[in-house]
Amino acid sequence: MKDPRAWMRPHLRECMPYTTARDLYQEGLFLDANENPYGTLAPEYGDDLNRYPDPQVGDLRAALAAWLEVEPERLWIGNGGDEALELLHRAFVDPGESVVVCTPTYGMYAITARAHGAQVREAPLDGAFDLDVSRTLGEARGAKIIFLCTPNNPTGNVLDPERVERLAEGFDGLVVADEAYVEFSDGRSLIRAVPGHRNLVVLRTFSKVWGLAGARVGYFLADPEVVQILDRVNLPYPLSRASARAACLALARPDRMAEWRLKIVAERARLSRKLSELGFHVFPSQANFVLVRVPNARAAYRRLASEFGVVVRDRSDVPRLEDCLRISVGKPEDSDRVCQALEAMGAR
Ligand code: PMP
Image 1 (cartoon, rainbow, N blue to C red):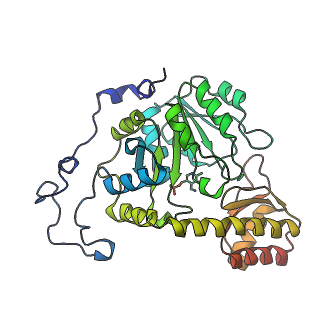
Image 2: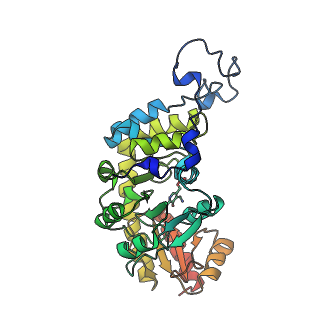
Image 3: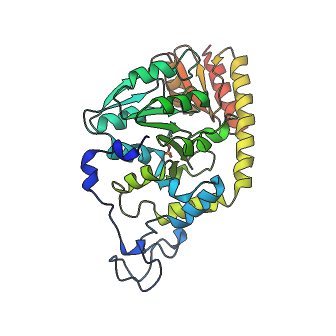
């Protein structure tokens, strides 16, 4: 039986979570946390911003659990998916231990691992950029975490959820499936698979379809034990009042989110078609960006910004993605502008 405590960094067995009086008491005369009693100079963000936020992130936790139809104790909530990556390393990966990244993929997995003194092993995705289960399991022997991204950034495809589950079955360590872009896909989310796999962590964010990149709110769904282990290395009051409130307001408007999702998915198809018509190879995408092969991509990237004021992402130095640019799906007029610029440059 897999037990998340077996993967925890050994010294954390002696570390208890930081606790505050507010963990117990959310009401009363607050003389416990050395705050300013008079008020805040930024009341636009809430007239109680002089007070520390709820350490349990209770309102957002309840709203999110209801939205996802999951148990609240399975949720870790913090400052974006990137902070989750940081804390997962802090909790589970000792310096010198290994993590596995399935390349080409989101760069922060390897950056965070190296910052923690971990070894980064690469398990390349297959020819269709899907998961190669046996190769990844081979690479992952003795490793602590395997990082997957589905839909994958920057290739845009979803990984076969059956393969992800097989990987989780076969691996004695954590499998982190990053679903930052899942709302744009028509694939099956791995959220429902979490109760069946104690080592599966599904990472999500409010930065994409929910329109809250500036608030930095992310969460993951996992075994309650994994969430409790993270509490041992979490900072006090882990999410700002303003950010938690912003995410609650967003969750109260799923209609707006659904509308944006439809618009972005429709625009992704139009942008992909327009780029293909210009003669570029466009990788099929299930996310809110498209990967496109443009001759001399580095130069095209620079000219797009300097001559046309259009900023895209240059991925041309990523192995297997030579001459690739990643273009976010914006509004229809944004697609028109980037396509016109590429055409005017004679990039083809
Ligand atoms: N995962 C992936 C795959 C991403 O592309 C990003 C953002 N670029 C993140 C996580 C980080 O998301 P957040 O804004 O929630 O930190």
